[in-house]
Image (cartoon, one colour):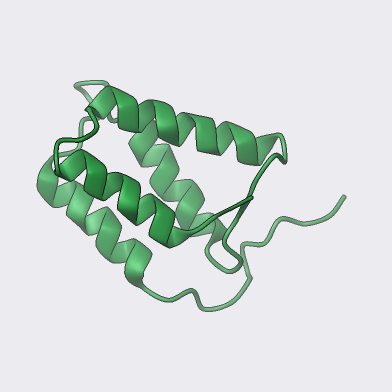
Amino acid sequence: MILTREAVIAKIEERLAGRLSDAQLAAWAFDQSYAYEVEEIDYEEGAEELIDEVLDELMFADDPAFQLDEEELRELQKLLRIPPSGSDGAREEA
């Protein structure tokens, strides 16, 4: 499976629409990040670093100290909508 920028945008939109709680979004982000680390999924080619950074922000969003407001969530969506410039962040084969 490949996690795309659009899929992350859609999940953030679910949170903004009230269909997901902060805890549910954080758990989803953690699950995606973990799946990537154990090579169960890949991130969209060329957007690996960005997706990783956004998931990192989202996975702690259920903690009041790191909670993201609507403006911050929309900013993450905006960043994800910027087309990737190449595959600089691609996972290297060992």
